[in-house]
Image (cartoon, rainbow, N blue to C red):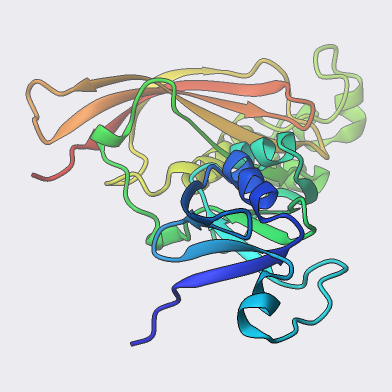
Length: 277
């Protein structure tokens, strides 16, 4: 069996590139050969940076021109794509594609590093993601997913079936409503969209996302064209006294529109299995 052992990028300044990846993508240094070559620890495969001229000097061969944008792609799997993407941008990476949820269950984003190299960030793929047990959840952890866009047609179709009130189904009548002043999604529609994003964010919880009730608020309506995202913050983790195989986890699930305004806040308790001994 052949195993991929190393990926090497040939760059103008190996040390500067390695330091950038340490800051932007939280990699740690594995090996350095002066300023000519720096290897970064990434798991089973090493990511190396070689200063231009190092390869030619060591092999006597010539590399093709390294100018222009690289067509190669480096992909990093991370738990929180949005947070990793923001950190990389703060360290100087250039955004190519903002984090987006894909139909197959992953969140992905693209950036270019300081040398123009293309970098993908992606969440674990569906069933391949390691299951989260009670012991893995700690107060202060935040999980994110989104966005998903809400259309007027979806708002009307949902309300026609499940919440047939004029301010959800008729744009003209909704415009005259003293509270909504325009078409607004049913709160239950917002809840359903939120649940879809929750499953994307923490659907790999051992045993699934199982709630035991909680407080639900709708601070403002969801409107046509809104792009909704969720932030799930772990607030409290309590082992069960009567059932040692599980625990209670309280979270705050905030659904945000594209302006960062909360359209729903849900604070449920979840039942999460403990890791088998």
